[in-house]
Image (tube, rainbow, N blue to C red; front, side, top):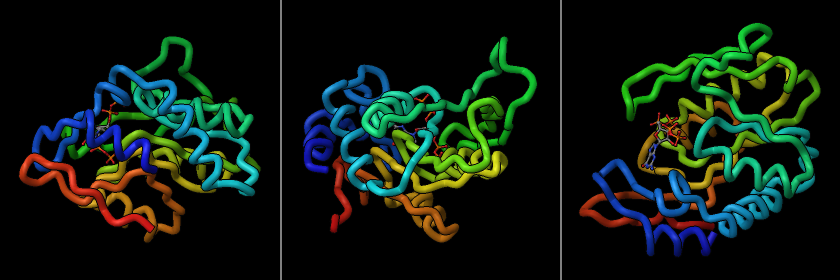
Length: 192
Ligand code: G4P
């Protein structure tokens, strides 16, 4: 997606060989126009899939998730990473390990909002090792619903998440694929 690629080139900051900072449009300040285009692009790519829900994870997944759901005309659910005061029982729970942060989070979704027969598009801002996406997919499957696909805004293609998810049979659509962050610069993977 050219618009997004240009934004990464103009505003992305390479923090290390592994981490790309994009807090001016995705992870802190968020660019609504860009998110609108992100929602349109996922909708175009997953056209005909009869999606009934978009599922993401707080917090940075919410912006691309809600814009995709708006475009698709379906609800969006975000998995919580922190215990909610009002969300205690009747929840799906999965453990998600973050290699980046070296911590395990329990993610939760209320059983009220996912049911057998749902056709779910998972959306997230970054794909690194795929742990968050796998955790979300396990929640969908606990509900007896189907993962139609996984939409990622920025995939770090030099980390194994994309390959692992594809091997597990999931359709992954990444709007931008970063091949390397070495030598302080962003190199993109060749797109088809
Ligand atoms: P994984 O789910 O693919 O295995 O990813 P990982 O555990 O490595 O990621 C943990 C957190 O770090 C996630 O956000 C993820 O989006 C973010 N992250 C991973 N790599 C990068 C990167 O290169 N740049 C940026 N900016 N973020 C990255 P989170 O902690 O859940 O944050 P948030 O959604 O609350 O903002």
